Length: 78
Image 1 (cartoon, rainbow, N blue to C red):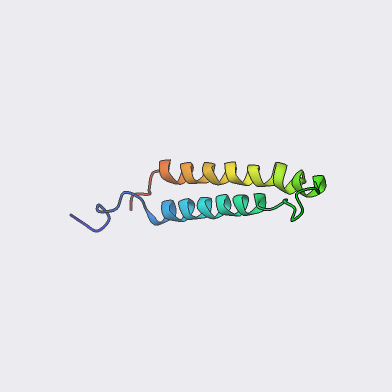
Image 2 (cartoon, one colour):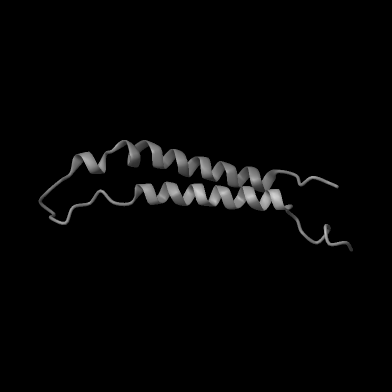
């Protein structure tokens, strides 16, 4: 059994999976915050910002898409 036959994924697959994981993490980090130290104060601008409502979920979904693509992509035969 050769070295190539031992691994299911190729290096490109692992790079895609890792890249998708990092994009997903960035999306989750962008969702963090928006709270207030004082429970009587509601900061609507921070909580409902473009970054938390639109950008972060798009990055998370895109990251999952890249991960799925990295898993499903056939590795190149040499």
